[in-house]
Each structure stands twice: as structure tokens, then as C-alpha cells.
Image 1 (cartoon, rainbow, N blue to C red):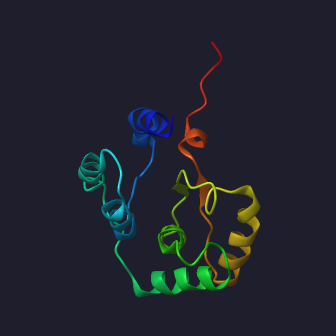
Image 2 (image 1 turned 135 degrees about the horizontal axis):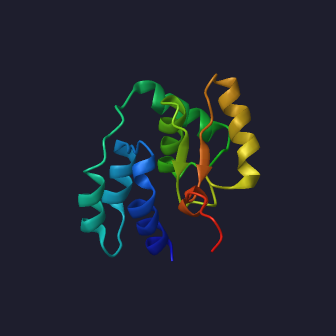
Image 3 (image 1 turned 120 degrees about the vertical axis):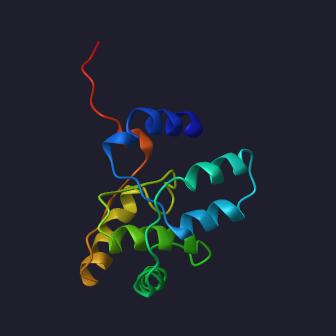
Length: 135
């Protein structure tokens, strides 16, 4: 289901947003073992990349230190750090354990407020479709 919804969102909605990726995204995709990996890598390389910055790693370390996500999942901390550092409006993810999780939102906002960072809306593609009139 996630693949179909993501494709539908990309085809129907992505043009309504400035879409960005990071080296952390490319690394995560490159390291994974799954079907369609090469197709996804090819696709993502067409998305503009946010410039790495040493502060992003520092922010991610603070997230890990404050238990926003498990230390083994540094990719999640980096994704959130990039989005927060660059003041991205929406962080689009299917990770509902560590990112798009209502129980984590307050904790993320508190840590970002302490760091003087804006917190992106962390959503799944299902939450980011345009409203259409009932038919």
C-alpha cells in the first residue's frame, strides 16, 4: 500500500511543493536491501539535495542524546535535523515509529524550541493530499 500511495502522491501532489532530499536519504536508500532499490535510487537522484552542514550532525546528536529516536536509527535523527535546520515545512515519511508519531510530536517540538529551530510538520503521504470535493 505505501508504494502505491507514495506514487499517487508524487504524481498528483508533488508539483505543489518544493521537494528536497538529503545525503542522509541517499545513504539510507543505498544501504537498504529491498526490491526496486535501483529504481528508487535513480528516482531520488533527480531531487535537489540540501547542502550538508556540520550543525546538522550536531542537531542529530542532540536528538539522539534526548531519546527522540533510538541511537541505532541515525538516519531518522538526520532526516529531522535537515528538515529543522533548513526550515522545511513538511517532513514526508512512512516512519510512524520514530517520526510521524503523535506521541513524539511534543517532545520533538520541545527539543527544537530549546535549539531555536522550527519543527516541520512530520506527515505521511496520506496526510498531504489536497482536499477534493466529495463526489
